[in-house]
Amino acid sequence: PITSHQPQDIAELCLPDGGHKRSCDSIYILLSGEGDKPLYGYAYFRNKADTSEKRGARQVAILIVASVPYFDRFRPFLTVAIEEYLSQGESVEVIHSLYDALEQSYRKTKELALKRLETPELQGQSTTHIDHSNGSRRGLLNNPSTCTLHLWDRMFVMQPLEPLQDNEFGGISLRDLVVSFRAQTMSIWLAMMSLKRVLFCGP
Image (cartoon, rainbow, N blue to C red):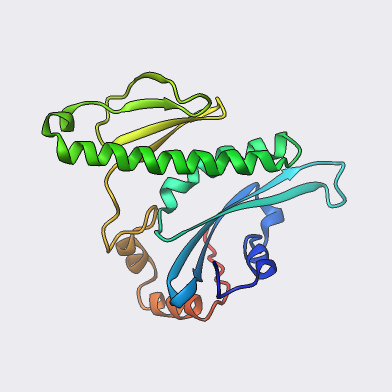
């Protein structure tokens, strides 16, 4: 369970400042669980024009909270899930399907990674393509470092088999961050640690 924030506060963090000015956005949230264990939240925000809404648009976000910062691995799932969520009238079944797909991806990734370690001859082989709708085998991919899921018959989601190292955060390069912001990197870090919102502006 999350101990650092109330549910309503987390929901507010998932709606970015100025979200009405863009069609989509990504939000990264650092949370805490029991014993101050760090939890990593990745939310995908969608602002979709809809004349039937009071403000002329529907604004929704889906958040994934995990014990590891697999941000780049979550994004493909959320970009598909949020469109499905909007097209199906914000059905909770879409959230259930998203959870099932993430769980299946985790299990399959772990299974394939273990097989590669235990059976050297498998390290050079392609990985199995799993259809999320019925779990049937559909073919092979050429990349031995990924497994895939076919999510809602709309797109393939490829998941790396290699675990993140201690100095890696999915989708974010620490080196690029420091090079871009230099001395301001520490100010950004302090703002995040004090749960301040950070707005990045660019050309």
